[in-house]
Length: 176
Image: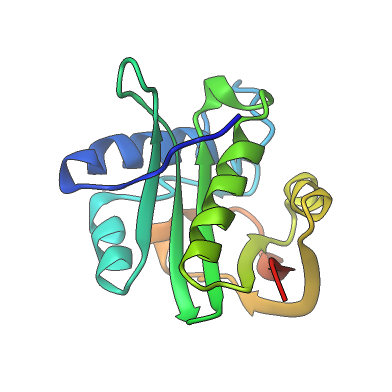
């Protein structure tokens, strides 16, 4: 499965916000494997935060249904240096989870960065998301041993329900 990616436009913001909040936070009783509902509540993103990320250099790329143009997934990419990129907010609509769409979206994002000079991709994942970390490891990402603090007190990212959250840094070398 090959997924064409297109840059987000301002008119896409409501759909990005809706899909990210559904995919990351879910709702009570929702069975998606990637939700953070058990340890972070509230919105994952809002328009203000999305605009802030974009103003700091994040590029949101979208995967849309070719027939309906409905948003199916998105990913945020940002060059840390010419050869190292940060991948964030890999989002798959709940209806497409467990279909291989996430693998294809990740591959498309990696291909995009390689075309723009990347040799390495870095990402962070909340430390208690063992299933997601394992998913990335099966795709060639490795934990670097580095951790970064969770933004406690900054409720723009949601409200944590645990006091032991932090981000683990994963990295994948794409080419030599």
